[in-house]
Amino acid sequence: MDIRPNHTIYINNMNDKVNKDELKRSLYALFSQFGQIVDIVAMKTSKMRGQAFVVFKELAASTNALRQLQGFPFYNKPMRIQYAKTDSEVIAKMRGTYGDKDKKKDKKKKAPEVLTSLAKKPGPVALIPQTNSPSAPVPDNPPNYILFLSNLPEETNEMMLSMLFNQFPGFKEVRLVPGKHDIAFVEFEGEALAGVAKDALQGFRITATCAMKITYAKK
Image 1 (cartoon, helix red, strand yellow):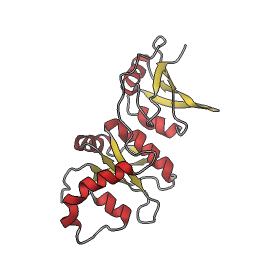
Image 2 (cartoon, rainbow, N blue to C red; image 1 turned 60 degrees about the horizontal axis):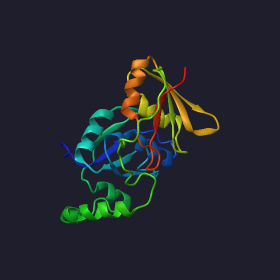
Image 3 (cartoon, helix red, strand yellow; image 1 turned 60 degrees about the vertical axis):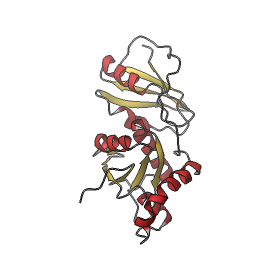
Image 4 (cartoon, one colour; image 1 turned 30 degrees about the vertical axis):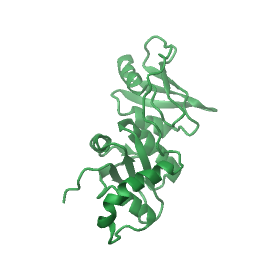
């Protein structure tokens, strides 16, 4: 039976050895490029291991993410993605009321309440604006096949950056700088390929306060 498209996508076949907080941050970094994320739910209970829900504000964003990232190698395992059975399924699983007989009756009432409660819920991935803000142009160096990233948040890791950049042709590797969490280098096979990724991800927000700055590395 086909499941109707909705704002919430269900992901499984993920690496269940990854720390929950790191998993949520990495999912945010990967999925937020498609649109504003309202919430991400990942639990470490035996029934929910290797699974997560991502709730988007816009239906188009959830549809695009599902199509683009189906089978994406996430922590060395291909993700399986589908729409959640209903938008409220994620909340039901979170509250332990999944399968409630009154679910259908209350479904129409719950949707606005759910979004309101999520908006109030604190957390690193809740309601982070997804805008590549048109800030002042970043001073740049001559074209190079290596990109220099700055203004990265403290929780950035190699996996997060790899997932962002390996969607672009010619991606080779990410290099972090020991002792400096806010900068990194990304290498591509050529200058033109590096330029495409630079333009696409300029100003990408890994967290609410850190818009990534990308320039060509100095030769």
